[in-house]
Length: 141
Length: 397
Image (cartoon, rainbow over all chains, first blue to last red):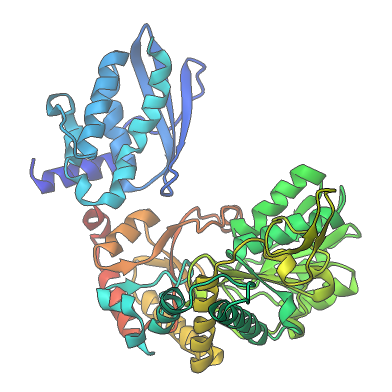
């Protein structure tokens, strides 16, 4: 994917993030991700039913990378079962951390495949993955 | 101003994060290395020549600090690990024992975490009450607002001398005068002021003052707690150990040394203190007033240049401190900072450890430029050129 396309996907997800805004619904589990190494601060809420991610929403104040990465991650994970979702997150983390990864499952998230070139942005890109993982791990038997 | 003295500046960086820490001149680095290479030994063990030299140099720095802030006596100067430790020592070693439930401590919502959090903990521990002095629309403290906040339970006013986000200089002298007339202690965080403006603790009549060496050209890990002798003498050591006792026996009896050693348990940061001494020499050589003037001129220049750009909001154009809080309109501060980093410009983004300020300012995060003596107008011109760009967000990615 060329850099201009990557950039426009990131910007589109930053300007018009998917599922941004929290709702009041007891079926969702919520986690706050206050990035300890930077100033991003997002809340994530997930509705899991029958081992499947029915919905994820988020809100907060964060940089362009954190916000867009959350938006993209949500789109990739909704509808997946827990195991597949954790696999996707693991591949995503591998990509960010420059380890071997399975790019077939990453969809649009592949736009961050060169974020390692900006080490100060890695934590931003990982923020949503860390938050979602926190909740999903409670569902792993 | 003397840019050749700062080895870091050879690294092709535009360093505007002096509120966080300052760069070190060669003299500071050299004196630290000189200690390690030529007279490494512990302090307060003067039985051999090098140890005696360590004592002399170390205590001589105490005297330099005393003179720098015009304290009455060198024993009122305690070396700590930094302003944070200094404030914690005062709150936990003095106020914890001298305040009681319901006593009120006045701070503001513009304070740094290091001045706010120790009181938060004390509130939980002994039930003091933290109250906030109302800030003006410019986020400043006025004597009138201080007076309005004082009740008959007010026992302490704790303030930064210069704040680390807005850079306003508080009227400490007037506040101290009023506070002392009402039997209220005055605790001042001088981390942002001591490097920049002449601070005379006797003239300002401060009870306790905390500051850090690394924000004034010195090494990291060194700071100062100043206290008026009769108050400092009542600070209960929160650290006990070697170097601060005269005797201890198996009957669990012990006797502690006098000031300043009683409050410096353990081997101090000798190399850091020695480097700090060189930093004070360096500042004295240039003159604190020249530094103030230079930084104020840089701020005026930068604010006027920034105001010519139509994409920048400056939040504190008129404060006296040489700090500028700004945002590029519609861009998250961290994205701006990362964009500037791509152009070798170092600024800080975030809430700058003043997490209550957003409640008053209405803005969560800002970029902060903070100047020091080696910054130049040419550097500011470069910054302005880099900020004069419609594609900052795109180019930050």
